Image 1 (cartoon, rainbow, N blue to C red):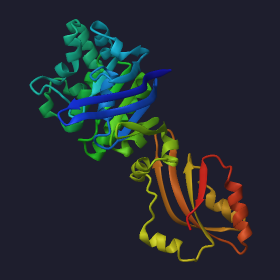
Image 2: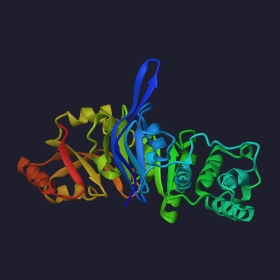
Image 3: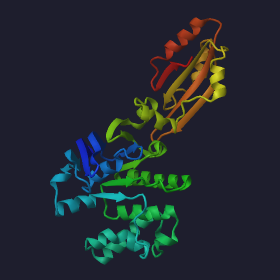
Image 4: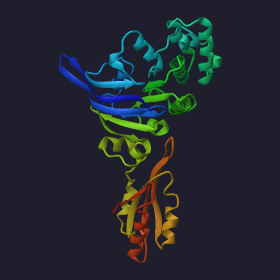
Length: 340
């Protein structure tokens, strides 16, 4: 099933300087129950795209369907109902500093006129979910940045949403706290079955938690697909630059010099997913080829791993190397290219 569907979505803003195209014919589908990452540089259109999901922005053309409903066709009570099913986690928390954590979390229910006893019960449930049950009577200013973001996530969960949209939820956090928040979002997805749509400029966030990813540039989706596939075989230059921040492809200068030193008959780079390169060196050895490990990089994705190894190959007979490489051509999860 599809939770969110973007079909030929464009958004043009009018300004004194002229028309500004924020979204340009965007097509994408977010599978229900998945974590879907949208990555791009500042100004790529990520936030505008996200705001079309809950009707905070209306496309200039195209359609956005959420949970089977076309957002722009909704109004009044129907749009309010959709927004209970589609909750949002903000980059800067958006909490009321003068109110308690419990009040902040329960605010969507309070505004909807939910009976006080039900609000209290539900707030206790979601605070336990995010690990802040002991902080219910604190105010946000008494909490750390990571704890405040947990309050924001609890507030988003209090209405029992089907979709959680996250706007750069970790960009203001340190690396350790970032991992804790990402772990919490994965917990929300796996235990509650909530679809998570997260936008970020950090490919490391996508690699950590996402099932699928869309890469945006100048308002367009330039590449999308399964995270492992995109990381292993990025097609666009911007995507390659993003992937490079997680799985470096550029060799250190000393390794580059060794690659071109002539000491090896061949130098290859093997891109692997799911541990397909685990026995590569021993496999070469079994066929009479000596393989020297020159460089390796690896990233653990949510569902599997992706990485590269650079090997220097030597053999008394060049045909042994040819035969060894030929035997690898159909190995699942492994793609080999020559470096020199």
